[in-house]
Image (tube, rainbow, N blue to C red; front, side, top):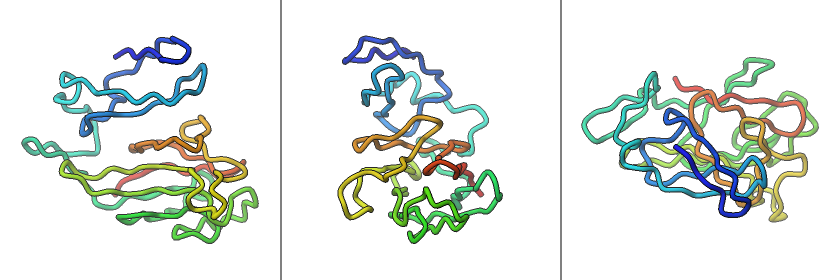
Length: 175
């Protein structure tokens, strides 16, 4: 599928297997101008099963085959379990990252797990809502190498990488 950035007119190609199938809309960031782009997912893609997915298709309902969602530290291999609702990630958050990385804020970012009719959405944000200042984390939150802005809300999938600060990389895992 191809999407044209309304700000810089760059054409962005997305592989069909990278587009979420249980949503009507999704969001990406333009690699050129960093503009957040919300786009409608065509029915032709939404109705196709995703190959090798960690989800099970049952009629019109898509559910995770496992209810357990974890963040796995790439260095230490430590697993941090996420729960339904808001999960504050940081050195003093609900999900405490305790790897002595001084670049991770006490309340760094937010991952929200929302139960939907089609399963569960996992949304990453660094919008300043957890810092108390209204500003994103000082050292940044990165999704698959791209720095999040205050307005970004990223839908996470299996094997997505989240980098906090400068040294902590977490990988999304199920089960």
